[in-house]
Length: 166
Image (cartoon, rainbow, N blue to C red; front, side):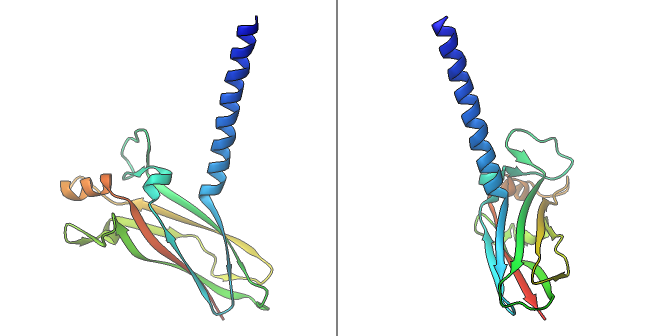
């Protein structure tokens, strides 16, 4: 009886602990809060998504373990205390790299990635807006094997710049 009870408690502890750890990681890995000053911008470097979210594969591919068809990043954006009026908000990406390189097989890494955001055009001083950035991989059957292999084995990094203007 003691062995059964001990085993049940151990199983409960292991499952409960791993669930809590995953929930903590899941909420911390996907959302970041950004506060922007009037007339200023904030540039974030998005680092090595494949290590935190899984290997990126083109849509239509049957996903295997540790593979995803898109990276989804979420940012809560608000203005600092000096803002008194609604301002224009823009989000742009730059410095897109694969394994630290801007080109793969002589072509820009940006040619193979689609990075989109759903940022609203404006932001009011008292609001916090959620901006979702989605990264997808655009490879097809005509893409050279060397390029496909580079994306299989490389980490994607890029900069996101959030700016507010009058």
